Image (cartoon, rainbow, N blue to C red; front, side, top):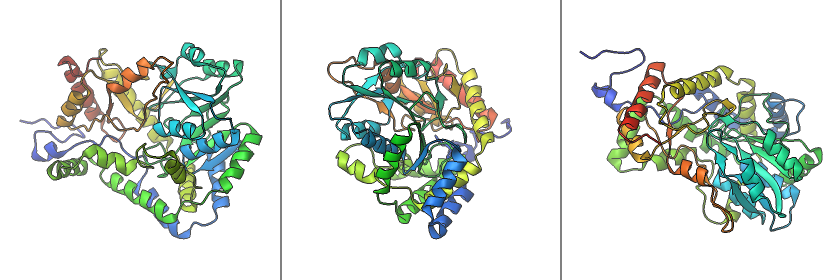
Length: 426
C-alpha cells in the first residue's frame, strides 16, 4: 500500500510520474502580469511613474530607474568617461554582459577569485590584481546571498577606486538601497528576480554629480516599446502558468517527445536579452533604452505590495534544505552574512548525473538556471581557480516556498542519496 504524505502525490502513480517541480518559481502573480498588460493600454506619464518607483523603493536616496542593470552600468561607465585601457576589478563570477559593457567602454575586466563559502572576493587577490590602470571595483552578490563590504570598501578607499555592488540577485525589499559603503548599488527586477516586474532596474548613486550625468545621458535614449514589454509579460505569464508540478511535468514530457531542448526553451523565455555573443554594439543597441511607462507602473506596484512574507518563507525553505544536506555536499555561499536563497546551488563531481537523478525523483535541477559565468583572466594573471571550479560543477536545486516541506525533505534526501553513490560529493 502506498502511503500518502501531505502535499505530495505518490511518485509511483501515473500522475505522480508526470509531476516535476520547475527549476525556478517566478516571483510574480498572474494578477500582477495582467495589471502590466493592462498598463500597456493606460500608462503614459513616465516621469510621474518613475517618481512613484523611487518613493516606493527608498525615499531620500539618490536613485535612477533604468531599463536593466546592464543599462544602468552602461550609463555609469559613460558618465565616468575613463580613458581607454583602464581596468575594472570584478567578482570572478558575474553576468557575461557586464564584462561586455566594460569592454565596450574601452576598459578591461580583471577577475578576482571568490571565497566560495561566502561568495566574497578575496581581498588578497584584489591587491594582487591591482595595477596603475585600475579605476573601479565591481562586486556581485550571488544566489540571494549578501556579504559585508567592509574589507572590499577599505581596499577601494585605500586606492581611490569607485566601488560598485551588483545586488541584482539579492534584493531584500523596499528600503534596501544597498551598502552605504558602495558608491553605486544596482538592483534588478527582471523575469526571474525577486519582486519581478519582467524588467527594470533601480540604481542608488551616492554621488549627486555622477547621478545627474547619468540622468542626462539616459534622457537621450529611446523609450522601450509597449509591444516589446507586452511580449516579456506574455512570456512570464506562460512560465507562471507552467509553475505547477503537473503542468511543468507535462511540458517537459512534450519537450522530450518533440526533441526540444528544455534548457534552451526555459532559459530563452526568461532571458531579457539574447545570449552573450555577437557585436558589443548590438548589445548596446538593445540595452540603451528607457523603461516604458507600463514597466514603471508594474514596478511601482510590485514595490508598493512587496511580499516580505514570501521572501522570509523562501529563506526558511533554503535553510531547511541546507540543514538536511550531508556534509559531503558543498553549498556555495553557505557562510554568507545574509542568505535569502534566490537560487540554491550545490557543487557535485558529476553535475549531469545529479541533474538526471533529481529529475527522476520529480525535481528539475539544472546547471543553467542563471546566466552568470566565470570571467576569463588576462594572460598575465592567475585564473580564478575557486570560481572556475565552483561553476564547472554547480547544480541549482529547485528550492522555493511553494514546495511543501515534505517534498523539500525528499529533495534533500535525493541529493544525499546521489552523494552516497558518488554523484553529489564535492
